[in-house]
Length: 55
Image 1 (cartoon, rainbow, N blue to C red):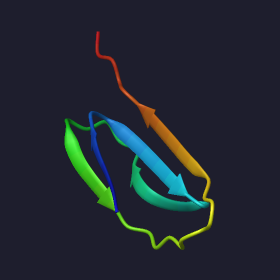
Image 2 (image 1 turned 120 degrees about the vertical axis):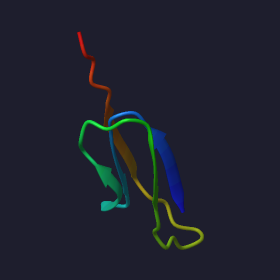
Image 3 (image 1 turned 60 degrees about the vertical axis):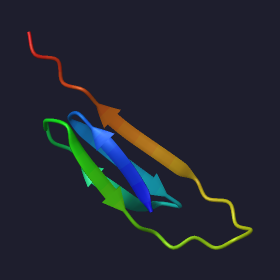
Image 4 (image 1 turned 135 degrees about the vertical axis):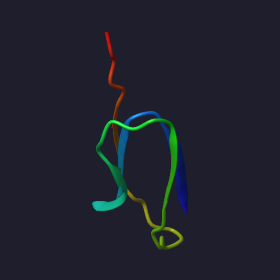
């Protein structure tokens, strides 16, 4: 299970499968996602995020 506390947006991929996907401007929120992983295997991890700045 993956967890994130994010102000604005986050996307997380594990092994080319999206686990967390919230690409909106948000106040702080908690996100979680599940993926089944196999022992002894390597997985690519990709994280994208942004924090909008208001002037």
